[in-house]
Length: 529
Image (cartoon, rainbow, N blue to C red; front, side, top):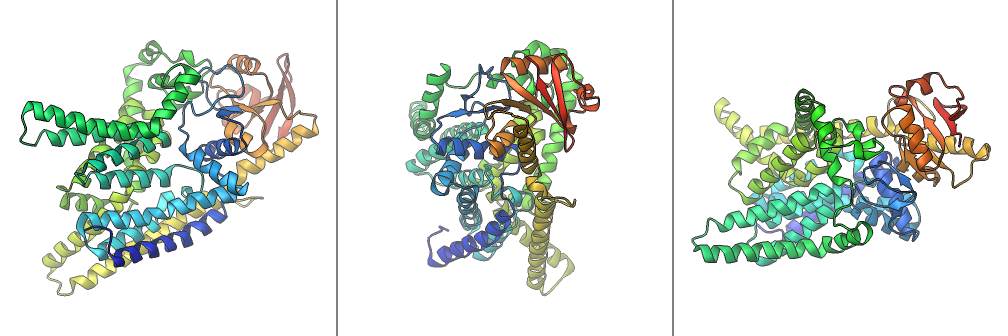
């Protein structure tokens, strides 16, 4: 059941070409990254390509208590996606070139799904169907052609899952390398290393070995995994030690004590303490984790299960439950689900589980046809249908057509939008930033003047201007933060009509802020020294 025959190679090549025929047109309307995560990776890739080093000209949180701008980059998000982005910027000098890099990678996802299915059950027909489902990934489609981690996590996670089906020593070394690459992509990627250590050492327990032999086996297995992991992550840890004096950037542990998502934007971040977390009360903590559970469950069914495939994936998982790949992937998925439900619930609610769960997506697509065939076979036996294979083909076609329609429906609503206006939804914030920047420059704003906005990576990507995030808190917190980092302008939009409602709803000049005017619903203030 290996992915080596000529037919399999041709099948993979055809799927790759089909994927490019879908992804390249999908990416054509996405002329800009589109949202803060993608803008962060894109602008940092541009900074790297321009030789500006590992520093960022904006602050989107204050967790590491930065001294000034620019500050060391990648203290919260990891750098691999920006490195890939830098390759596109360096080769082409445009975001279109960056998109090509990510489309070429994303087109490998259906191919890996096909290989995963061949490895699981060896049925070429069902493997083809799995690859076709990966061509129409519903909620993932808008995010694959832009600068985000989805495709990379799918490929690295899928490769790691395939490796656990092998017992060769090289598989453990390669798994460590992929686990390191997953961590280099996302901070939660370290769960894959822990999962690999538990998996291979756990299997050693079931061998008929003495305790001495068992200890030797576990030591060798762990060493191979850790060597592979260190080949990728070792240089990054050395960089952190050189810059911060520790292997992890300062402030990372503070995320344990957030009591709402907005706490990420507190200044100073030293307010995030265990004592403050306790004072929030157990009712608030339980409610937050319940909301995270519901949100992550919804993501499981709608995103990972593509709505219509979810029950068939569960049935396929039950049919192949004894397979190493299925057991390992289920364990990793459970760990990710629990981490973003119990430990980091607010990150889970706001997209982290959506991103991290993509690591097992290729396996889920590979399982779906197994479940579909099992259901149709059982129903055919129950209903005594003599032509069950015709029913099976009809169900396959119906589910593929549904996946196709759902994918492009989600894509259209996310990228194009339903509202008429000057630009498509995907680039509205980008175009608005350009118009705000034009307005500021007409009023003698200098290129080095710092602005305080809700989305600093997006504003810096569009304009090149240094930016810091509006801190969550009261007016005095905003003033103190602006003074500390030398901000000249404050840009408030409708998202600030809650906790900064007085400044947004009743804009006037005060002793601290000079009200400049309103542009497209954005209140523009100047900090008075």
